[in-house]
Length: 501
Image 1 (cartoon, rainbow, N blue to C red):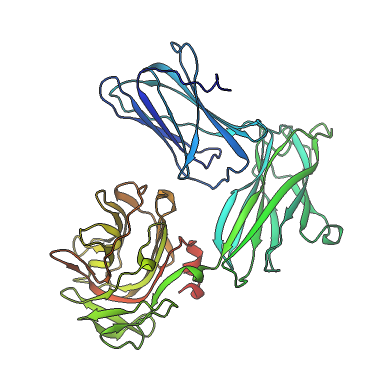
Image 2: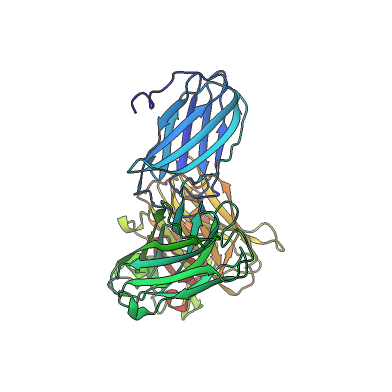
């Protein structure tokens, strides 16, 4: 193995960065920016679905080419949810990049390849699809974190099992503290053909933590059976739920196993199958609530915190008026704001969700809604509303970062003197995790600045509601009510339920 992994010294430097989420259909972009003979190439995989790597222990990158005498092979290591490899590769035509993922027995599980030219001073893009190499049965996603009282939908998929006509499954799951965790139903997917049927075994024939079922082709009209020509099928949807237990976390592990198979010739088959189960983490969302400012029956100069943390705010120039729920605060856009003293609880740079109700004046509503900014202008996190003209949509922007500002924006017309429910949720460093929720609808947004991959630094600045601390402060014009902050990136369904408000 030492000889295989020996690096070849060549022209240029290539940086390979791949997310650990190795799933079919994901793609990596190689961007080459360099000067002279030094080539710097980056591969980044778009995050589309979670996958644990506990069973995958070796990741290899291999680069070959017509004029490369020996393949360039290097291991890839996990760094901050990325797979990283650094190798030297000569510029030239027809470079083939290959990524292989092995389990702890040395079995090759996933493979992805792509071929391209590496040319100095030329930007290039390269897509690599990482697909199962072996017969594989999996529950997707491999990992899901979701709040309690919510439902998870898992997909049962098979790969590389050709001419599959019927298969018997045994699903086993660990029982959480809450006894009401259950498999709700299994619904066959009939995209392959309309004759796929499902039978389940009676519960009294199984253990308490087991669920058994059969998926089969009831009428032999398709020579491929229940899979396509490559041996792939998305066979079923499995629904799993639990109820609140009082614990911060309940982790449930599910395993899937094929106990019998037959092909289209009615012959029994049992190939050497690789299985991937899944883990569901149910969390208590209220355990992650940092502050809850209801703004109900508060004195004019005080904003009480209804959470257990007692993060009270001091109000300057705000007025109290009728809100979405009870009373609310009005900010006049001049000198009105609320300040909450700095605390470690408000220094958030891992995961965050901010939930509030907002009322924007038709003529004047805009400004900084909430801001956690340091004395030198570094932004831990803040929400900004901007208006271009009277008839245009408002722009809501979630901003963070110091030297590099990252801003994720959506546009929505909410300047109508009505109360609107807005939510921003984000796991810092994971661009695909961010979303804006406005009136219970996820609104498509974009990175107007930066790409969301940086992790902002916490700062010693006080939390400002209604203004941004600058030499010339920016203030907000409008009403705010029912503000909640969590140090957790929440599922959207949590905020669309009345209990989540």
